[in-house]
Length: 414
Ligand SMILES: Cc1ncc(COP(=O)(O)O)c(C=O)c1O
Image 1 (cartoon, rainbow, N blue to C red):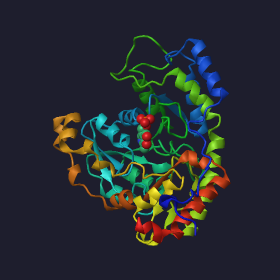
Image 2: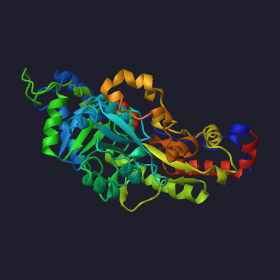
Image 3: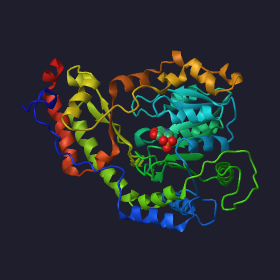
């Protein structure tokens, strides 16, 4: 039996060929220089690069409208504002996500209400969601965590029944499809991030999608400090902030978008292969394959670790062993979101109006069991560039996991 790397043995995944991320080529360079020399670096004029990108991105996602913005946090704020969320409204959000999904809610003066996740998919639980609705609930931020879609078949009827705004947080989900339809315009708004680590990147950046003309027009004006896009001047229709994307980022995004289909398809194919083989090992299951998920975009490949099938070895020890073998891996954001210091009373009082603070839940006492167990014991995440490797690379990952399982008695002693 091969000795584990964590015990001084040879690395099973040595030489794993993971392409550097973000991906850069001559076309990105060409676009940047083109924008630079064009001397129009802000999108306020008609025919901007941002406008071209918006059209291309809306088309790529089969959506009617897109608005490019500075990042994937303000796109959530923009969606909530344009969707009519007001100070003191409650907005439901899953407990397993990045902080922006909740801080965007407090940034508009609303109250984040955490909802537990489903024990099978680890996406927002439709049952827990419905149970969390009160007369103050105005919206839901449904995060496609890791790129795995939420259960639209259950969530859409709930939001319709209760007349709630549905914002899809698609920061992880470029390319994900539900029943043949890209995510992002199935709800009222889809919010995307193009931050450096994401599947489509311009360092910083974001976009919203919508099929609703009224929402589009409202969001477009809000994002441009109250002005109509393409009409520079000093006529402002609403008091607002500046959420615009720079022309340099729009240029890079256009160039990056030209390879997104190929990258998404490759990652999907590798992800399917990895899922199938990992599921044979036992104790390292992928998220469920579901026929309604016609394509899976990836930010994380999520593995559900079961210590009982690994001789009781804790997930964290398994992660150390996997890293030692040469497979980069982690446990994403570590804890359910409400456990962040930012949610303690003293901190939240600094950011929300006092009349809202009195209505807040006690985040410090919150305990959502599925989210807690998932974060502490089960979740393993592989970052998406790993899926850009080839079949041999994926096979190395599979063999490495199998090697650790074979040597589990040795790992137990460490
Ligand atoms: C789920 C989720 N939502 C929103 C964001 C915010 O995106 P940005 O970093 O572009 O502000 C992120 C960023 O990582 C995210 O992971």
